[in-house]
Length: 530
Image (cartoon, rainbow, N blue to C red):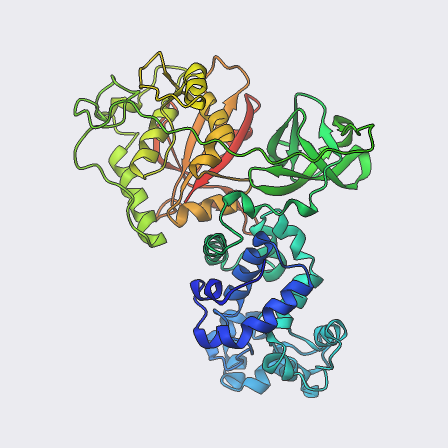
């Protein structure tokens, strides 16, 4: 797929910069395999962020005292030392980059000479040498050429040398950001740019289907899951914290590498993206090989989207204070909705919806469950309905689905053509039907929290091992004063901000533990809806 100037424009790149960088950028991207929609989207999200929308192709070393202390505090242990260097770009560059990245000492002048340049900035003499070898052009003798002539190439060089196409194929923005940034600085903006890039690329002639985000040309499964279920893990060890998804019997996987102690790294398609993780090798079986000299290629099964269904809407008797009519949508007047277009405004509207529903209010008996039960399915339905996202409270029966498939128009009749879905059933419905209604599955809480902060509807859904017991659904909601997500030492989200109607209802909470990893649950999943 070829990149167009329209896509860059939708990401905030000026017409002048589109004219300047489009041709060399597309040529270099094509040469190094940044050609699928998913790879292009991830690449652009990172490059646009790193370069300030293509505006910054040379590092500005003109720092104030406070700027030096904030950005380069390690190299300026005292304010008096920072005052000596402030507003002296050459001195600053030579000081902070001295004796590292292949540079000589401060007196050599290498630090300032080989400061950051390019759309994804190249810094340090050794990196300039490596770039020269990759480019087959000498930029060590004339480093200014990186900004003047090879800014686009520097971004593709960094991407290629860090093997980021592979991470892009797995739609893993967190790991890509860590590879580029060394942490998660600017993660929220990078994720928003990624979503904009995906949307812009879908508008292009070759990108009209959400399923087109998957570049399956490099996904070559040769094995399948043998047992009924197999846990995909983020690391080759069995702990609750490494469980990221449950794979079902017959799920096709590609073995990437074999590890010690019986583990293998695999790639697997989950939703519309290829993901990576680890499983025990003993639970995989080779795919059968045809015997007639012809290996059939499976055609993709088109996604059937059945019509969404609700019981009668806008019944005034269906209120937050009523215990009856829980299968119906709320009918009270002046209900808040999510209608804004800006991410911050959408997030604010989601918080207003949560405050309106207030599942913890004693008077709101709609969300009060009997002992050992939960109203999380009802609460999630009301939240999604007000936010303009489809999550069923009732869904078609199997017989009704057959009639719909046959072209019939089926009337909505409780107990006959539709039935209620509890949290366990919603876990399965999201997997079977969610993508057709705009739901995207995530494997990473950092991305899920960032999506909620940007005004997306986000859920954690779990299914019980005992189907007679209630599953659980938690809303992952925007962060706010008093309720901030918990992070690990690397800045990754480990406990998002949640809202739950789980027996002990909490309008806002940050759980002490990852409850979805509890042994009582057979499976769990993270979902978001833009």
